[in-house]
Image 1 (cartoon, helix red, strand yellow):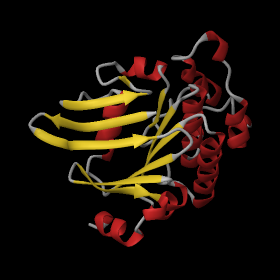
Image 2 (cartoon, one colour):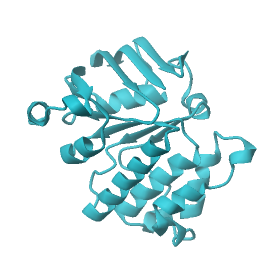
Image 3 (tube, helix red, strand yellow):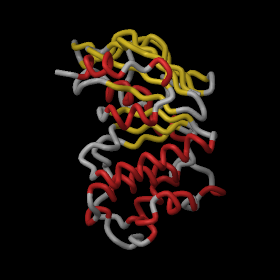
Length: 231
């Protein structure tokens, strides 16, 4: 579904990504790990089109997308759950979910039933403003908004950050369900090692703008990964 090859990315004269290559496959969770400031979010911004790359390629279903604007990537099935959630605080929960309609055809302008099956609390809060929800509820709302886009590639940037343990479990169950459904690839950026280890089929570890380790669940060396994640 997603193939990132040898991507370099700069902010002015500072190089944030150095020849980074990662992939994400339908029916699997690829987890991107690393400390703060090593380039994880920069890579996600490059994938969804929020930051231009200097070189390399980004392909979705074997089609190059690195020159496409973000809205065109969304139309092709790329959905981002951003770090910090970034829901619209003055819109209701229902209106927040409906913002996911923007890139889809008329036949899909309905909130999928699975959003409320995965996160029942949202169904009971449709008329409440997004800003009145707790942090965990806002995170569920951000994931629900992304699912409303019917994504082929779901990109989640640290969905457990600042979230209570009960909601982390709900998010883990939701990701497991979406993986098992087998119609999307999931790219998960995470610092919570246990959460990542439990969910990841494939993983890559970043340090100083580079991928320094990668592998599968079977080759996951928690001690080696932890060393890269320790300040």
